[in-house]
Image 1 (tube, rainbow over the protein chains, first blue to last red):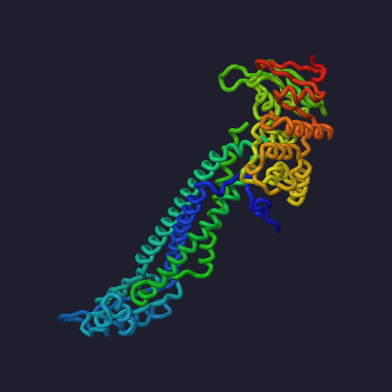
Image 2 (image 1 turned 45 degrees about the vertical axis):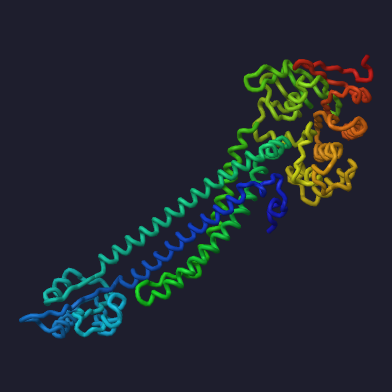
Amino acid sequence: MALPSLLRRKRFDLPLANDPTARFLLLITAVMVYLAALALAGALAVSDMARRWDSGLSGGLTVQVVPQSGPGAVPVAERLETTLAILRGTPGIARAEPLASEQLARLLEPWLGKEGASDPLLPVPTVVDVTASGPVDLPALKARLEAVPGVTLDDHATWLADLRAFAGSVRMAAFGIVLLVGGAAMMSVVFAVRAGLAIHRNVVELLHLMGAPDRYVARQFEAHVSGLCLRGGAAGLALAALTLVGLGQTAGALRASLLPDASLALWQWGLLALVPLAASTLAVLTARWTVLRTLESMP
Amino acid sequence: MIRFENVGLRYGTGPEVLRDISFTLPPGSFHFLTGASGAGKSSLLKLMYLAHRPSRGLINVFGRDMARLKREDLPELRRQIGVVFQDFALLDHLSALDNVALPLRMAGAPESEVTEHSAELLRWVGLGNHLDARPSTLSGGQQQRVAIARAVINRPRLLLADEPTGNVDDGIGMRLLYLFEEMHKLGGTVVIATHNEALIRRFDHPRLHLENGRLHVLHQPASNWV
């Protein structure tokens, strides 16, 4: 497809490239795209994380058998056997397996350290991992399990609700940041275009008198602003990519213990690559609107 | 072609700089617009090239009534009017060729045609060796010729020139006027504003004379004046 004539020709009727606002617009676009890309990456990573946790926890139940002491305390092994029997006899439950002590130690390791988590004196409850394959009458199951001393049932509902609320908040915050950044970018473009129109008023008036339609003048600004925003946006995106890779590497060192995997998939990087294009498109539309509105005042 | 009826023009709330202007320019005519400095020649030209709307009266350009014209209709009409501005109004960041090419590009002509025609016209006005020169590097006479080439590149139906000989010596002034004569012979309607009586006496064209904002149409050729 042939490029529009203004893009093919590296010549503008208006000498916009030398304007002081050109460098300003280049820098501001780089910063805006950097912030927007980071916000978007954050939202994507959190959404992904939440989805993984959600799918991992939905349909899963956890039963804890807490060690008891004192006179009349029933041994854990005995209560565990009762618990497993109840669980395995409940319709809708596909699997109920107690976690091995090594697995429990690995879960506690981030908080207690390797040695602390493996301390045999630590009163660690026995955890039964339950997988549901269909609807389970949770209140009835809960009542039956809690009749066994020191046994509790966690269906993760509270945790999942908190997680979903957190992911939703992060998404909203990221969306808000992208909106704010977009608004600030639009205001910058309006400022730069108005300054350009003021600086080159004589030339604009001359073109106007020679019969240049408003769209012809607007296209000059659009091509100028679009070029600047693409260059600034590419720089901002490159910086954001470096920041994300750096953060990813730093997080990678900690991931084994505390942080979940927050790396971005290829399609998510592709989405981030669209940010400069979106910024450029927004800038072009803003420039067009600003120029056309300003030129309306000319006879 | 151009018809003014009882036209008046004032800037803002100031006094009328043009009063009761009435005249008709038939197609293919050649007129000088004369008058002392400040008589309103530039203002009258501005009305003719549609830079201003009149404060009162009727202006009809190419059969279109200005009062009824929509703003979006103006560019197309303006492209049929070539203007040589008093200060040339060349764009100094563009080469002579690109300055001349402006009207063609605005009209959306193919780039190959734009370059070919612009170069050809610059060669015709004697600037074939200055196609890539910036206007600031050219002499006053050369700049004037670039301005004229730009004004005529579109073969305008109406060619207006505001003091085209004002910044050049009489020799170059004569050559420029002969250029306008050539344009006129090609069928264009020409109006040249000037106060250079010596130059215009050499041409047999009627003139429109402005005095204190009022127009006196002198139909006889200047060579017949006493």
